[in-house]
Length: 214
Length: 194
Image 1: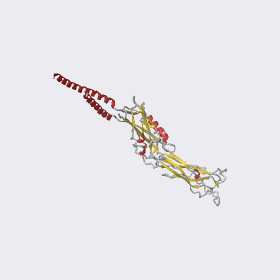
Image 2: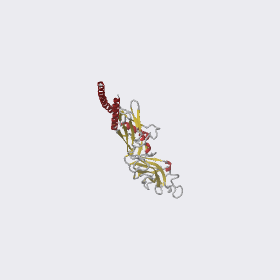
Image 3: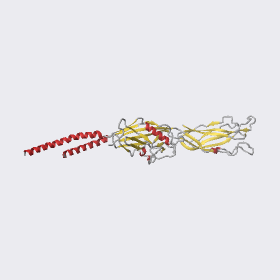
Image 4: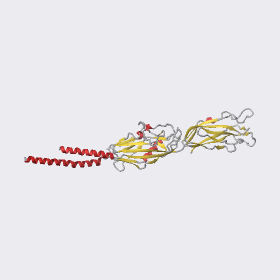
């Protein structure tokens, strides 16, 4: 009887010990998860304000498509965009506004005062290259795994959109003047073929966005 | 052992909760690159059909009391030019009188003339431009100022329309007989961005 009682007491003590031990393990485990799981991205542009080299138009006053595309890409890459993401399920989104004229006063109807273009951007890690195109505007961001393990990160490289991708412009074209802040998909802009470009200063904004994800 | 399993599950649950809270704290990063470029002000004029400017047939009457004198029925000649300016512009017309072969002895007689005057205009945009007569009505030889430029007219805003260039009011010194030969003048339409 005494023996049974002793066993009972020991059993009770043992139960307390079992309760206390997992509690300590729980605290340590939680701390480790917090430290390693947080996804983070960084993104910088060394020279975010760029002036295109050369003219947007040819000798006949039309948009110099191929030459302009080259100048755009040179300027974007000269901006030296660098970034990193520590998570493995990040979203990379590229969008742009068309070139629009600073003075949007009344123009004769046949002249264009905006130029639409598309580009794509790519960043890579040791295993893969992640790209996104501006053709879908702010929608349809692309998946990117972690990249840029050291320093300021990995460089983003801008290039032409390969031909054959639906709705994407391989060279810039004149369009009907939109809201200067419009950054939608290519299909949302009205084309104005064979229209000369009104003189003036034109500006465009390219936005690259990184949303971190686990 | 059952107690250990229970405690371990609680720990995993706690870590997942903590992880999701921190995921919301992750900040989306973006960078804007501003591209700027200047489209320069340009104008261009292209003659469509040069042959259309030629006076067909003889410039002078070949019979009657005014034989040898400049025909009075030449009327108006015209030519179309393609033109555009991608900004506001100034349009000016310059005209050179039509000059024929040189006279061997210019002082021997007042009967002959070698200069034909005309009016040149550029029409079709928001304002018309014209050149004043290049020579005076009495100038038989075109010895005065042959080349004149009219006052430029202002065109507002970009334009992309053909221009009609018109030539009329052909004249020579009164009663003079034109020296035989080829006569040529010229008109220059100048579009300048402003």
